[in-house]
Structures are given as C-alpha cells and as structure tokens.
Image 1 (cartoon, helix red, strand yellow):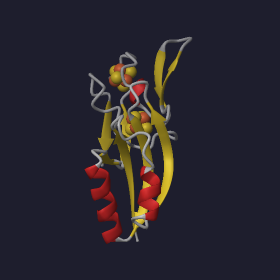
Image 2 (cartoon, protein in one colour):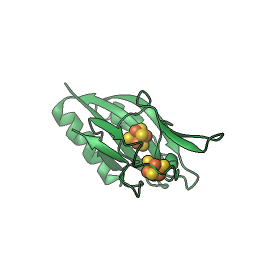
Image 3 (cartoon, protein in one colour):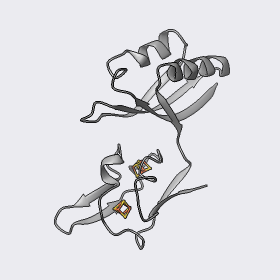
Length: 135
Ligand code: SF4
Ligand code: SF4
C-alpha cells in the first residue's frame, strides 16, 4: 500500500466532474480529503491523501493527468522567515488552510505551523523568499 499526499488543481471545466468518485470506484483508491477550495475564477483545489496499490495509483494519476488536473506532491516541511517578511499579504490568498493569516488590527502577517500542510502553494507567490521548503 502506497500513500501520497498531493495537491490537485482542477481547471474550471473539470470542477463539476465526480473525479474523486472515479478514483475510488474505477481505480480502487482510498481518498482522504484534507482541504478543498474553489476560487472565484472557479478553479478547484483539493489537498488529498491517496492510498492504494502501485498499479492503481499509477492508473489514477494517469486519469487525473488526462483531465488536465495539475498534481503536486507535498513538501516535507515549510519554514516562514519572519525577518524576511514585509507583511505584504501576497501569499495569503494562495494558502488553502489559513496557515498564513493577517491580523487586521496590527496589519501583520503570521504563520501557524500547526495549520500548514506543506502544499508549497505560497512559495512562488512570495516576492521576498520569506517561505521555503525544509528538507
Ligand atoms: S505551504 Fe504555504 S500555502 Fe501551503 S498550507 Fe503551508 S503556509 Fe499555506
Ligand atoms: S508574500 Fe512573503 S513577504 Fe509577503 S506576507 Fe507573504 S511571506 Fe510575507
């Protein structure tokens, strides 16, 4: 049994399709949905743990790729460098779990490691390299 934690980004034309159902029924995979979000542009983002046999997993990933669903593996850990952060808030809309948030009273950004699922989505968004992957 292989277990993978991945971020799936759905193009808008696929958002309404029963993709998880097909992964379970047609590919015999177990799907644990950790986070789900649909943006105003109707791009869907799902953070899931997928478990199953190697062949089933490969077939399931092929099925996702055929639907033009972007698949990203989760990194091991994420570090936020408070000293590099200028609290510009650019990263906040990219975070599916609210691990990065803005205190509206102080207008300061903070990072909650407990909420971070290491999806890496905030990393390319930060212009100051204040967030990085720790291997
Ligand atoms: S990696 Fe970044 S975007 Fe992903 S959950 Fe952690 S803080 Fe949020
Ligand atoms: S994008 Fe970078 S600099 Fe801006 S708030 Fe997020 S971590 Fe801080």
